[in-house]
Structures are given as structure tokens and as C-alpha cells.
Length: 144
Image 1 (cartoon, one colour):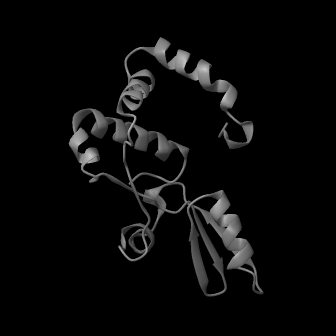
Image 2 (tube, helix red, strand yellow):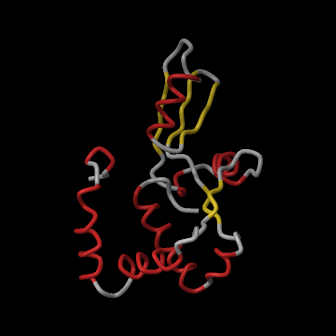
């Protein structure tokens, strides 16, 4: 479990890399999961909802929070900012939480090569990997 923002995603990638390199059988066996905490809390009157990202927030505002009254939107800066009860309700409760299973599908050599290029000790490999794929990056999805 990491924060729901881009810094949390970076930490998650480091953790996944650790498990991939040091305990690959956990991943192969389907035993590594990422808990997905919310990025936003949404309140309107007595109604409370949680959104995992901007798109989910927009969807909830269109579908669930359409009644009368002011809608209050709060953005969590991290897991440490959440009340324990909120974390339990949104991320720990097996009936409500979202878990993503970490899996390597088929292309194990390609995955191994990508992990080595991006997370290895050679910065020139990272640079080359990014240069070769930069044309596919869409500016509207980059968090700059």
C-alpha cells in the first residue's frame, strides 16, 4: 500500500521491482497485491464517497453527487493524512477495498529486459529506453 499520488506510484514501482528481483515466486504464484487507497474524499450533506483518481472523481460527481447542497472535495496528501477509520473503510476492509494483483504475463524476457533498463544501475539504458518510446507519451497523461 502506497499513497495514491504519483509519488506513491513511484514508491510502488520500487517495491514491485524489489519483489520481482528478490522474491519472484511471490509474483509467479499470484501472491503480490497492491492496495488502492483513494485520492479524494467527496461529501455532500450526509453522503460520503471516495475516488481513486481524477476520472473516478468526475464519474462520482456526475452519477452519485447530483443532489442539492454544496459538494466538498478533499484531496488526500498521503496515507498518513487519512483518519484510521477512513483507511480501514476504503483500503483495508475486504468487502470494499480494491486490490490489484501484480502479474507478469507471458513475455518474461521482455519484462526482465524492461526492469533492467528502467531500474538497473546503468542510467544510459534508462535514457535509451525513454528516448525510444518518448514519441508514444501523450502530454495529457503526463504528470508534469
